[in-house]
Length: 265
Image (cartoon, rainbow, N blue to C red; front, side, top):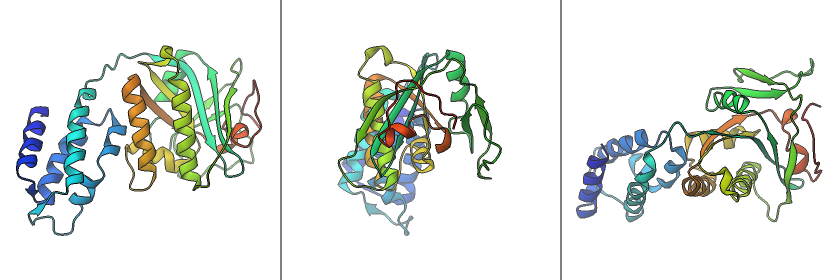
């Protein structure tokens, strides 16, 4: 399949005239290979725009930007090969952002079996995590699905980042910026490279965009940065939803930084 993609893109560079439907067929093959490297899909922005044209059966000139995106995607095809035996990192991370202060990141050293268990909730429709015993008065949204209760006994979250934001932006963008900050912090240590990593977020918008691999909004810019960091460190991400009430990094995102904490409130 990869050889056919190489051939098709080469022909497109020689004669960039196809119907949106034909390009969508090529895009489908690229998407299939990108399933385990979802952030790579953030590259394809002009390509998606071209395939969504109303007159999808009429031959049209492929925009130069779309051709560049296809070439970049092909060059990054070296990351299609993934070793599913890559070990999990025994670290559980949580990120958060707030418009009142900025960004927060908390981490905790946890057993490998717990990290592996939580990773199974990644991309699972409605799956979410809560810590400790949930208060009886809390009503979880009906759209949430499988719930995973985690006992915090012996687990200590430390706030590693609590940064004031330097710009105004929509909260979804701030959540994405917090996630990128966490990833940059994590990958400063080579010991964290070549691992599968689990992160907790309380933003459904960022969760959806990152699990999908791309976004039609300004979040796509942040997803491209995530892709670059993951590729260079050979890291696989597992992102799981956690309600704000249990997010360990909530305090750090509001300027309250602690050395050791649990998230039961």
